[in-house]
Length: 299
Figure (spheres, rainbow, N blue to C red):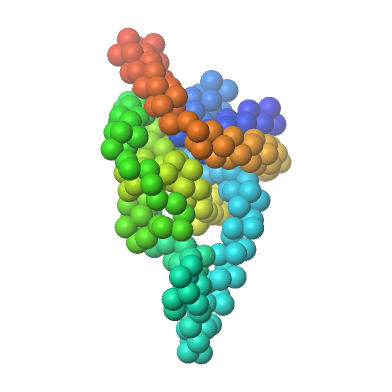
């Protein structure tokens, strides 16, 4: 991986990780266009591409951590303080009506993030080999999921009541969004697209669905990124470390800007523009595959 390749991939990762258009789909295309790991056996090339993508995601994880730093600190502090109060037998009065509550909203949100992270952790470990293999780089899979999630997101926009805010999230939200996050293991789905879709179906307002989606991504992306970073040291060619580091920093900067844009955009707009984009790109990929202009798998 050259420095230029890493910078371009970092830009693509940062732009597409949080906007619901599928970062993996764009990174797979970008890696093909750049000739990333050209000349390497198809299976190994797929593994090297997966490892590079997972490490680049650490840059967008850094963007989430910086953007939501105050929220994360509040959640962590409340989680510790409230549970210490439970252990020592002291309850906290934290509700708006002054009623006794065992956990504050911030501490409860911490539990929702933990609960919502379990499904993707289990599924990710069970299907680790398939996720790293050539199947998840197949353009038939990517194009199909681009279209499927677009249709489901459109239904979510129409069916969702969009009334509930962060303070009203419950276990159902954690379970629904958590299982939807598993769809992100299939390329073309989009982590943000799948989880925002589930949040809308659960009745969350668009900005809440996006915020919870981003917070829920932290454990999953951190775990997969660190795991792949360890394995990347053995899979990636010598001399890739510096390039990958620069690409990760680029993805962090661009990712921060993407979060800022999407949260403000969703306050006054629907996800319609992203739905249309997914349908067009997915359709174009399918036409290219049917016409034989592009190959389905990594070669």
